[in-house]
Amino acid sequence: MSCHDRLDTYLRENRVDHEFHRHEQAFTAQEVAAVEHVPGRMFAKTVMVNADGQLAMAVVPAPEHVDVSKVASALGRTSARLAEEKEFGTIFPDCDLGAMPAFGNLYGVPVVVDDRLAQNDRIVTQAGSHTETVTIPYADFARLVRPTKADIVQ
Image 1 (cartoon, one colour):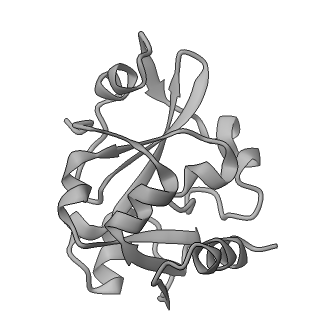
Image 2 (cartoon, rainbow, N blue to C red; image 1 turned 90 degrees about the vertical axis):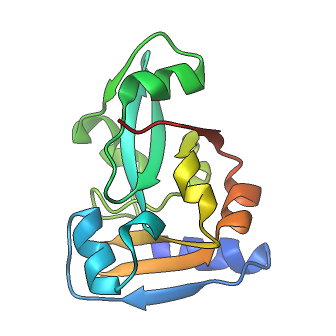
């Protein structure tokens, strides 16, 4: 099953209003936000973090940078660092590397979301490829993912 299909099924089963968008290939969160014509503050960038040996997903607005010490604190860990691709690539087998959606819960990965994203009515996240996104209400994202919410940007 593709990431698109996994997300679509999950969102439909949970009665979430969502919309997939295809766009030209883009690799950075800011590039994706630009080709999707959405403000960077609405685009949920996913960054993988290794916190005391446990992988976690930090989700921040596209223009922001993750503060790994704040992520560690939010998770109740002593330290954290950015995870290397070889550490998490196999966890997301139906996603292009670096194009994971903000739904870490679908892959058994805890999620920490930055407070700033909660200020949006809707958010946009990658949908498993460098050419597709999904837009959803933030309230539904929070309800389904149940992320830890904290200030995690520099």
